[in-house]
Length: 284
Image (tube, rainbow, N blue to C red; front, side, top):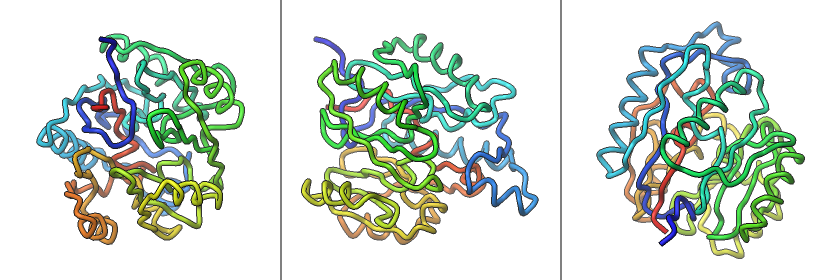
C-alpha cells in the first residue's frame, strides 16, 4: 500500500520535524520582532533553548515522534521549521522563501527530508511559497494565504503542480502585517478553528461557515501574540502555550484537551508552536 504522509489538518499527529534555536537571533522580518528590536531587545538564546526543549518533550509525551534538524550556524530563523514547504499525502512540497536571510535553509531542509525518506512531489520555481500559509480544509481542498511570504506567483506555481494530484488550492489574501495564514487562521480540531475574523476575507469566513466550522475569534492584537498559532495533535488534543489563556479556556469549553508549554521568549521571533512544527505524518 502506498504510504500517505499528511492528508488532513486534524488526524492524529504521528511524526514531526523540529529545529533547535541554537543560532537564533532576532531579524527585522516581521512586525512582532521589529517591535522587540525597537525596544532594544535581543534573543535570549538560553531561554529559547529551554522553551524549545519543553516543546519537544510535550510532543513526545503525547505520542508524537520528533525528528530533529542539526541546526547550522548563520541560519538565524531555522527554528521555524514549518516554513520551508508543506506536506501532502504523496510527499512534500519544496517552497521558496521570500526573505533573503531564510533562503539558505532550503538546502538544509531538503537534505533532511531526503534523509527521512519523504519524496519531493512539487517545487515552487516562481515567486514565493512558505508552509505557514498552507492548510488542508478537507482531504483535497487546500487553503493558501497570500500575505507577506507567499505571493500570487508562488501560489499559482504550486497550485498548478498540486492540481495534477487532484488537489484544489484556494487563495486567502490578507493584510501583510498578518505574516502567514497560520497567524490568523488555525484548524485545531475537526471543524474547529481559531481565527482572527477581522484579518480574514469575508468570502473565506463564509466558506468556513458553510463547512460548519466552530470559530474561536481573537482580536487583531491577538494575532501578534500568537493566539491562533497552536497545533492540532488529533484525537481532540491541542498543543498551545500557557499565556494563551482565553483561547485555551474556549478550547476546553468545547471539550478539547489542552496541552500547554511555557513559551515566551521564542514567540518574540514571530512564530509560535505551529510555526516551529513541520508535520511529516498524520493519520488519515
